[in-house]
Image 1 (cartoon, helix red, strand yellow):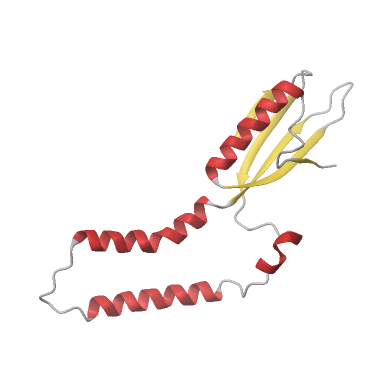
Image 2 (cartoon, one colour; image 1 turned 90 degrees about the horizontal axis):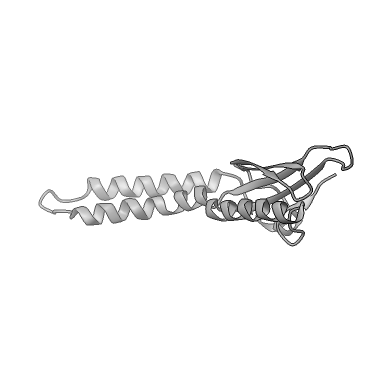
Length: 144
């Protein structure tokens, strides 16, 4: 997502956001970064697939499985991958080019979730239109 916004001082700001596929490491999240990698997740997925195949292979021929049960199982299996994709962190950046009297500025921050990032980009654009700068209390912070 990219937006062009005219600040109250007349400068043109570019507010953009893009999804981050890797979690940015931060000091506050250190204990979560010490995981064993992707191995445990792949192993658990393999176990689930093997158990599902065994469940289907051992089903007696005269047992009728209702369609809503299959649909519920598919939703259950897709819950965590979909949640992971929707809750990815997004990088939000607001940049203003140098003018005759003002230096260039760059503000960067991270926001989680697709709907949250849309709201935050709208808030940043509105603050720039009103005050010529993003909100200091928001997720964006100035970068040198």
